[in-house]
Image (cartoon, rainbow, N blue to C red; front, side, top):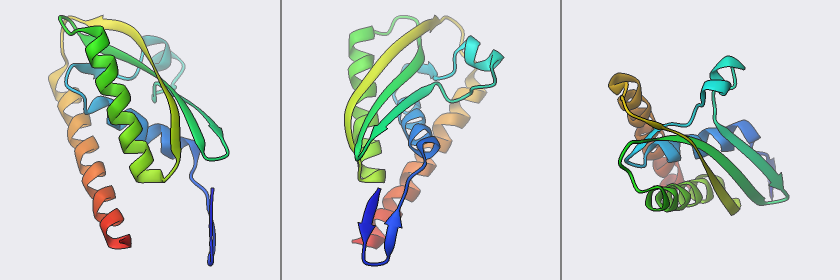
Length: 134
């Protein structure tokens, strides 16, 4: 929550989770952030968030493509999620915990490409908004 001369700005946990999920999907080799259990329970974000004041802790559940180095992809996801969430929200990300839920042997190309395109568009729009503020 941010205070300024005009009032308060509050960012919903769902917004932060969406930003984090899209940032995770931008990383090459991430298949999805939704697990089979999430689909059954209609919980489609695959991101758990814990917000304390202006510190954010994130748990991100991902499926990755077969043949990808797990330590390498986990680090890339952590870096991208941390940078994106901090840039777009102004909050400090303390932890990004990656949970590898599975390995994908077969890609559903159209869904994956659409999600990545949406993530890139959202990120570009956020950068435009950020540059307008400055």
